[in-house]
Length: 360
Image (cartoon, helix red, strand yellow):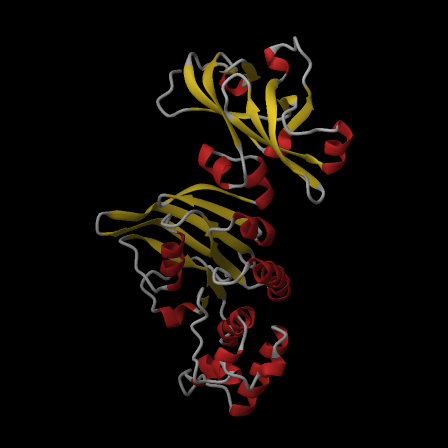
């Protein structure tokens, strides 16, 4: 099922949760709604489900306006962060619940229900705990049962609201890989809400970055990470170093350093910020007399060299600003670095944005 939202607006009192949001969710794809708390992602998910109604705008399912359809008519499966399982029912009865409450004309026979529940429990690899009750299960097991229950009614759309938010980091990682494998098997159009950028980038086919009720960027995980459309996206997706300075005719001057910004050739004397990922910095030993544009002189304040990568905390000698660099541990050992050394860092890649209100 294809899903489209058009010009969705939603306010709660004076707070604007969604501000003219239009999006398409392709058939059979897994889309992540990603952003900080309060950005509108859960509100949008609930509007698609029919659990909330927009102040204006429409929801289209397979091209048909479903804005006024009841939640039961939308053929949507919903998985909540806190499982919402019935504690007094066994795992089997929880999964069977949606089938048992169908109208009599649509309700499967008891044999069909049993076969369906058995199939779903095998799918989520928990057929061996069918007779247990939710309080006897781990958090990860409960969430998989919640997903099986949502799938029991054969939804055309699967919506997941922070599905792994209540779980610890190790279980989250296992479950998101499992969700990706499950989705590849079922191909149900799915949308999941998360504030965890690693989760979105690892699991989703497409990522929707949201901020303050608006869409900042939409694209594949690779495109939103490697070609961020705004300072917000750059800062939200992974660690980033900020180089504050002034932009003039395609050059950012930050302290003693000069950075090329060819896309801003027409900008004159405006405040700007350069964004550089820690892994996009080359680190060398400092050579006195090196011109400013060739590198930034820094002092190594701390090195965390465990595992395949070494994380370096560096202090600029010109502005006293802090820089984080990540280099292979082999290179760290080869350079023989120790805290207090003077080094030179040079961005392999920098994206410069002019501050709002900057002159052009």
